[in-house]
Image (tube, rainbow, N blue to C red; front, top):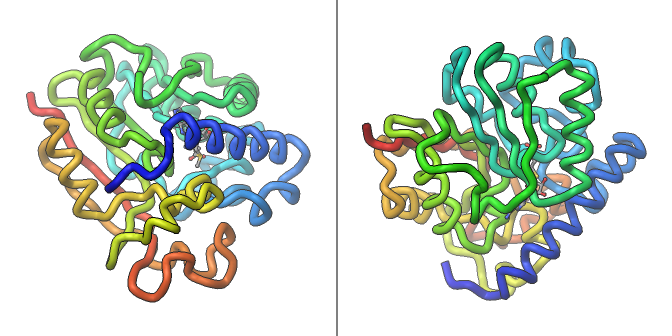
Length: 267
Ligand SMILES: C[S@@+](CC[C@H](N)C(=O)[O-])C[C@H]1O[C@@H](n2cnc3c(N)ncnc32)[C@H](O)[C@@H]1O
């Protein structure tokens, strides 16, 4: 995929978008979903156990911006270290923290202060004492080599202007045998036009920056991952989705779909 804009400009636009979204969540769910935000804001994506979520206090369930449930791809165990790339309001980190407790740790990494504040508050309300939120970018993960058992991410990698760096960093911080378990938007059909790739509002809504399914596999392979599988879980993202109105912004020859993507770092 060609780089059409300065990565710093993209990161700035994405940060602004999700800072506004975090403020919207705090003002109430009605101000958030389906207005300026895409990516499922205000609703929990398919694949979650709603009873488990109802048992969490806090507003975490109201603030999912994800496009699937990456936790379906892994069986987390007590004692493990989990890292969620682009943790948003913290839902996947809180759910992970409960699974790896009491000795494990679930880290969330995000670059947006407003999201980090919301996530920390949600984790405290949910009593997830082993959830930790780090400020930083997913292109430069602030954790040591080989320190993580499972990488999670939910609708975030598509937002990065440098997917290669994200996947190399994910590989670096995973221990040998560690798992990569991600929900993300991918494109099927024709690659998006340059005009779509340059559209910042569509980028922040998880459409313009999405990789073709084949590119995702190629980038993961280049980073060193094995056992790569991409499973499409929602066919209709784009057309009729709240982030894009009633028209598929990609045109008739391609579409954005939600996928669960799994891979492993070799032993
Ligand atoms: C679509 S939301 C997803 C949030 C969360 N994973 C969820 O499922 O609700 C994207 C999140 O990723 C963060 N983000 C986007 N690009 C990032 C980057 N390059 N580095 C760190 N965080 C990033 C945003 O601040 C935002 O909180």
